[in-house]
Image: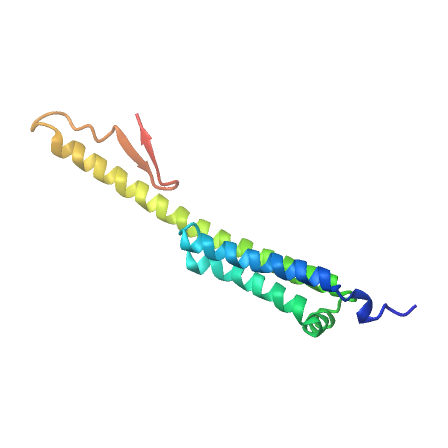
Length: 148
């Protein structure tokens, strides 16, 4: 059995207009979020790239067929889904890296805050009184403040 021809999978004009419109709306929405500072510029690059690639894949069918054949897929929709899955994997890796960096920063800030809290307590105490340094301790492993 022969695989269907490439023209059997071609989008209709109505479908192309719908996909391009949605892609442009995605691009505008990402730019709006960047302008409102809801997304930082460096994180918007993947979303802008996805929107641009979707427009290219829709308007230039030969590029979509080339990528589909390069990936070893039969139908262009399969090639597009493989690229979309790859995009989502890259996006998850990027988010994981950001979360890991933020967690390290938060742990460092918690340790610094506990250090300064203890220091302030010592400075505010009258001379000769008992130190209350046992009230706030830091768990070095987790970076959290423990109170007694």
